Image 1 (cartoon, rainbow, N blue to C red):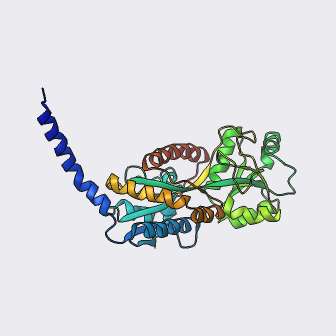
Image 2: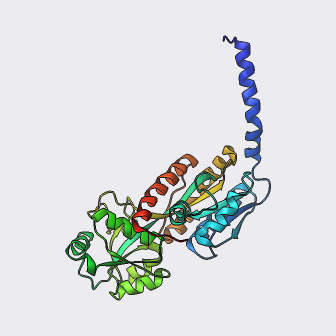
Image 3: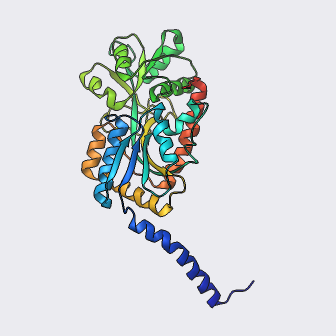
Length: 325
C-alpha cells in the first residue's frame, strides 16, 4: 500500500487529535482533592512517608492530597480499596515492600499487586542492620558465619514477626551461607531487640530506624547493613557483600501506586513531582532522619523493581515456610 504526503499528514493529524484529550486531562490534573490510602495505622513509618509525599504533592499541584488510614491484614485491606477504585488518578496507595511480598505469604489474595496497580514511584529505601549484643564475641559477619558453621544449634535470629522483613532477611542469610539458624519471632521489634541485647537470641536483622537508639547507646553492635551501598548514618559499617556474603541485598522500601489503567500522563506527572519532593533538601533530611534513603524512581523503573522484588522474596518465603493465612 502506498501513501502520499497528504495521506501521511492526515494520519499524523488524526493520531495527534486522539492524544490531545489525554494530554489535556494530565495537564489539568488534579482538578479536585486526591485521596491517598495508607494501609497501616497513623504514626508508623509508612504513614510518615505517605504524609511527607502527600504534603509535597498538595503544595506542588495545588489540590489537597488527603491521607486516609485503612489498616488491616498486612496492608491488604487498604491496598484492595485502591485496586478497585476508579483509574483516574484521584485515589493513590502508599505502601511498603510488603505490597509485593503478600502473594507469597497468603494463599488467597483479593487482588494482584502487579496486574491491578500502576506503579508510580519508589519513595525511599530502608536498610536493615545485622546486630548482636556487645557481649557476643562476634565482631564481624565472618565471625557469625564461623559460629554458625561450628554449631548452628546454638545460633538463633530474632524478628518482629513471621513474614516481616527481619524474618525474611534472616532466612535469606540462611540461604546465602547454607545453614539453618533458628528463627525466633516476636510481636514487634522492641521485645525482639530486648532479647538480643540480653543475649537470649544471637542476632537480628533489624530495620535501621528502630535500632538507631540502641546503636548510639552501644547496647547493640552493628556488623553489617543489608543494602547494596553503605548507609551514610553508619559509614564505618560494611554492607553484607563487603562483609563476606556476596549478592546479599535486602531492604524495606516504600512506594506509591495508582489503580491499573490510570492514564500514563497522569502517572508520569505524579511520579515526576515525587522525584522532586523526595530530593528537596528539607524533605531528604526528614527521610534521612528516619534512617531511609530517598529514591524517586520513574514508573517504568519502579515497575521493574516491583517484579524483581516479588520474585526475590517469593524464593525466600518458600525457603522459610512463612504463611500468614
